[in-house]
Length: 57
Image (cartoon, rainbow, N blue to C red; front, side, top):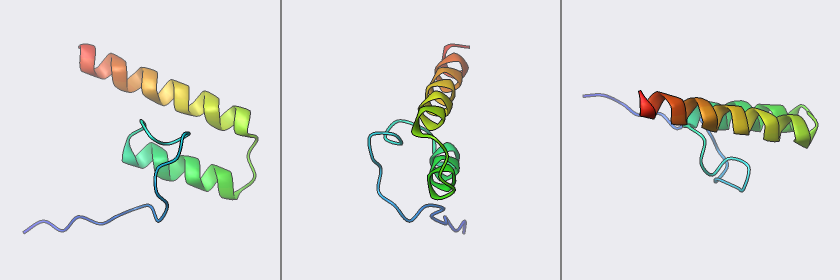
């Protein structure tokens, strides 16, 4: 039987609501480290675009 482990402790917010689980964890780490929110938004946008491209192929 497979065990699913939750990587993140926080609920989804506006920044992480549509990104995949691994990118959500990465964004949370960026937030804890004090990364500029503009950089986190740019990362989110790139992540969403990459996921969209994967689905189209």
